[in-house]
Length: 132
Image 1 (spheres, one colour):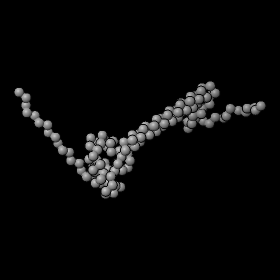
Image 2 (cartoon, one colour):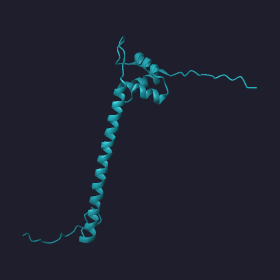
Image 3 (cartoon, rainbow, N blue to C red):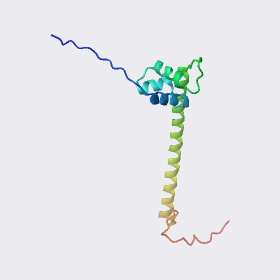
Image 4 (cartoon, rainbow, N blue to C red):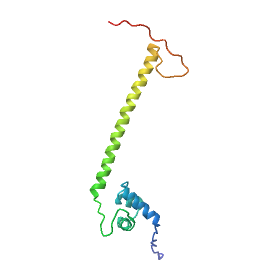
């Protein structure tokens, strides 16, 4: 015999501060309605209702329309920018490694201390060189 179980659905209550916070995040351009919906587990129509109610930029009688292409394009642009910045950091790291290796070679083979240490005395130079 099965127990008579019912699914209890609880209605969530959101404070006005929370609603205004979501509207502010949307208006600042940090998140799209779809992203906010996925992030907080709230239906997108409810977020649109809050935008109509609490938005400082939205005038009454005008409808907010957000194209899905715009949010996906924004996301792909940001991902592209991240890839570019990671590549730039990689190039800089290679350059740093190269220069550090050159300083080590100069120290070992030429006995020149290029690294700036305050405790080491200044070098007297390598002497005169004849130019041809």
